[in-house]
Image 1: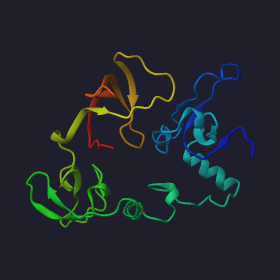
Image 2 (image 1 turned 120 degrees about the horizontal axis):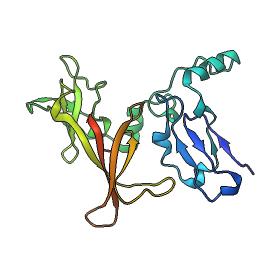
Image 3 (image 1 turned 30 degrees about the vertical axis):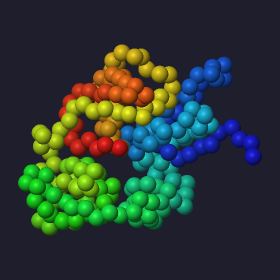
Image 4 (image 1 turned 90 degrees about the vertical axis):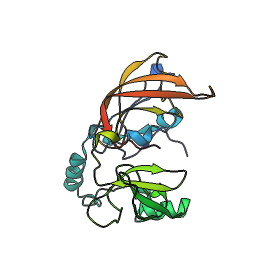
Length: 230
């Protein structure tokens, strides 16, 4: 079956080179809707994949899409926004993780005191900053740290505290979508989680201790609360 492009409904923008510059890379850019933007996930695609893609919704906000769907009376016009991983359908994310990775019971400790508070199904079910699903008595609790070697989850009532803020971090398994950046330090913008938040930052490329991998050292322009490894 021959085709030139595949169009998908992802919220992203993709700039393809002109017909006389086909040797250049396709550039993945932010969509108009920064809340729904999905380039955070699409950055894992290769140039060979990107060159065959079109994202028609990249220049339209989600609310505009809903209005158009209502105007044309499309079947999915009243569909609720998906949360989590869209391809799972009606399967809950926790159920999917349990099937794929399994469960291993561990303890939950209060970060400030070390007091035992309860049990969890495995540290991979929880992420830094999480509040929903903790299921502990006495109000709201936040996941603030994890000991992955000992399968311990640390929680706190006080998520926003100075000692939990970070301004720098290291990133491995680097993948350049287009031209490789310069060797020296350069200024860019970055996202540390899904959502509209964008930081100004400085990035320096270093080599790992075994010299087999490049590592990006990222210095944010301001503190961030709750950076999660992964």
